[in-house]
Structure formats: C-alpha cells, structure tokens
Image 1 (spheres, one colour):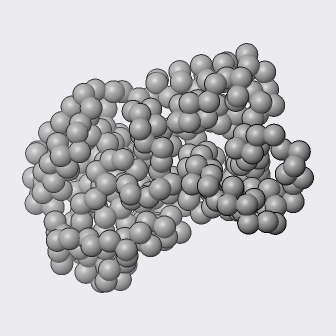
Image 2 (image 1 turned 135 degrees about the horizontal axis):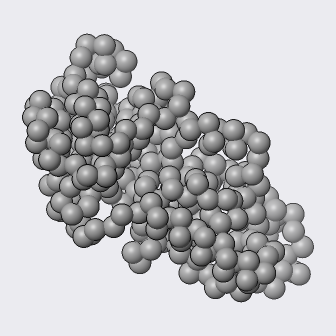
Length: 312
C-alpha cells in the first residue's frame, strides 16, 4: 500500500475509533474493528472508491454490527455481565464532543441503555445523534431504505428517552462538589446524608469488584445507600483483594464525574456518577481488570494530583 493511502486512512482513524467505541462500548473491540477496516482498505481496489470517508465509515459500521450480532456477543451481553468500558475524559476515542447529543451519547448511562436496542437501532442512533449523518447517508451505510432509517431512529430515541429522566444539567464544578460530598458521606457513616444526596429514582450498577458473574443492580435510595456504604467501607479483606492500600482520586470518566481507585499507581476500579439537579441519579462501578486496561494506560501518562482519600 502506498503512503498516500495509509495517510488517508490515518487521517480518519480517530473518527472511526470513536464511531466503533460508541457502537461496541469497548475500546479494545473498537480498536480491533478499526484495524479490520484498515485491512479491508488495504485489500480494496481504491481507484474505484469515489468517496473514501463514506466507504470507510460503511465498512467500520458493518464490522461493528457483525460483532454485535455474533453469538458470543449476544450471550455475553444478554447474560447481564456486561458494562461499557470506561475512558478518561481526555481520551480521543470519546470524540466528537461539540454538541450535547454527542457528549451524552458516550456517557456510561447512555451506552448502557443502547444495549437494549437492536444492532440496527443502535447503529442508526449513533450515526444520527453522534455523527449527524442524514437518513440518506445512513441508509447507504447500512443498506436499508431512508424510511427504515427514520423508523429505527424513532424507536431508538423513544426507548432511550423513556429511560432518561433529565433534569437540570450540572456543570463539571457543581457535579464534582456533589460527588465530593457524596464520597464524604459514604466513607463517614452518615447514611442519612448519603440518602439525601440520591434522587428518588436512583440506580446503581456494579460488576461486583470484577468478581460477580452477573451485574449487581440496586434501586431505591435506601438500597443504593446501603450498597454504597458497604462498598466504601475499608476492610483488610478488601485491601488484600485490591492488592494493597487504595488511593481514591476524583476524575471525569465518559463525560461525568468519577472516583478512580488506585493501588501502587495502577487503576483497580472506578465509579462513575450521573448527577442531576444537585443529586446523584446513577452510579456505575467497574473493577473487572479487562475493562480498565485503556483507562489505566491513560492514567499512567498523567499527573494524578492529590487523592481525595489516601490509605483506604
């Protein structure tokens, strides 16, 4: 392959990776899909490709759909043992992030909701909401009619909207203060204050420190508060499981405030929060080692600053 063709592909690699991550919810799978797209590009008769960007988008999207439809993926995701792979906010795979729709489409809350859509609905939603493709363009990418694209988009928006209870959007500084207060209550035994910081419809989802076969789900303020209190209570057994004494840092993950747990400089878990109207509306706890690889690699390249909790 000549260098011009390689350069042409590399110029769009970031966009393809962002698309694949939104479709698959996994950075590792997204990278594999992009690499497979490159192999298709390498083998193609490029002189006959009139619109390279459109061709690459079509190939990458359909490779992702093949993965979503595979028997292994269906089993893993329907078994209830899957959460999206969390990424630090400066990760280029989270782009584009110019509009509210683009930023929301990559939150752990929305990525989790997208699991309830069919692969076709998910693809149309992502292409439309995050990348602003027209229905005519989406129809060409997915080999469907414009009418079908519109129907998929309507069903996807309806299903996502039914689960999204939006309130006043929290700016990053306000959301961070809520999480700081939440963390203080969780680690101090102030259960009444912890309950007061949760919305009436709060939900919590956890992979059980990476050990549970199925996701742990909690609803109601009292149950979530009990789960959080237990989770943030330090014990010798937990420190042994984590590999040592933890330091907890505040960061932003997938566009929302998060606590990143670190042992010896390595990330061992993260809890991402969705804040609405000054309260915590949802929590996503992820500690499975295989879901933290890219986040940990990015953490190693930054100055983490002073932890909010040290020696946990």
